[in-house]
Image 1 (cartoon, rainbow, N blue to C red):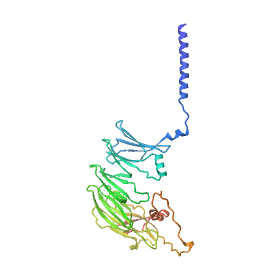
Image 2 (cartoon, rainbow, N blue to C red; image 1 turned 90 degrees about the vertical axis):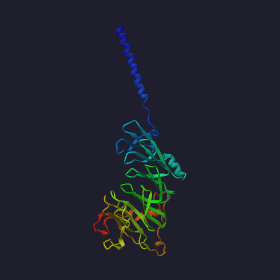
Image 3 (cartoon, rainbow, N blue to C red; image 1 turned 180 degrees about the vertical axis):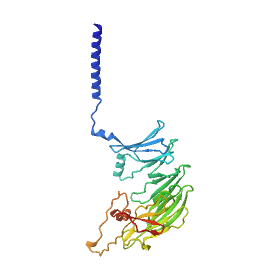
Length: 364
């Protein structure tokens, strides 16, 4: 019976094939080892360019390594870069910039050898793919008008409170380096950069840099500390603190310098807590961030208790404690001292309109 014989042969072949396939599947299931877990990946974040054409995805692995994928949503074009930190698109969606550093193992080895861990900034033109590298880059920000890239360079030493600031023109590819910058802020239009410069222990000031003309304008210079410089979110109003030492008190005696429109005003409105009858006694303006509404029409600032310095008589029980700090601390010790009182106690918020101080308090 040929039909029956053919059926038997087909059935036997089918059974053997199935057995072989099942055996193959069983062999393709390897046992995971602890060393394999480091390759597992997790999505850390995603960003879409404003025009919706580019997607940036940051991926981390269990072993601490990271990589970033930048891909075009309309074409197969994609870029994959390892060990990327911060990454951002420009407002006009024409550029992408990202910080690239060594691998985790390489960074640990450098720290063990007490060598600096240097990072680079890569600026990429999304239309042409052209790249520009910035050495020793620590941070960056695009101006809102997408005309400039502002790059904060790594400090010369871990204890330094200042660093160089490179302003790169995205149109003509020119650069201007501003030195000894302690902090900065950029107005919304992107055409004014306010910087705090510290060229020495008693030589500090505030300057304005205008990227369109590559010019500097000096606003203030002296020996007092300058902190918390900030533009209003949607105007050219600028404010910052100027602090002086007090021999009998712990912490700086801060005054507020306020420019309603720094592009036009040459003289600031100054609020000195020591000249105000409405300011609470035994309090001081603390180095907390300055708050302003979009138009910069008023200021909010923090205050905290102003403690007396401990007067010692030289007796062992009255000697001040020894302050200990580590060279790897993110903030240098003098900065830790200035911030200590603010970090220990809550601050209050108090609005200032022009030179008028209101008695209403917000916060704790």
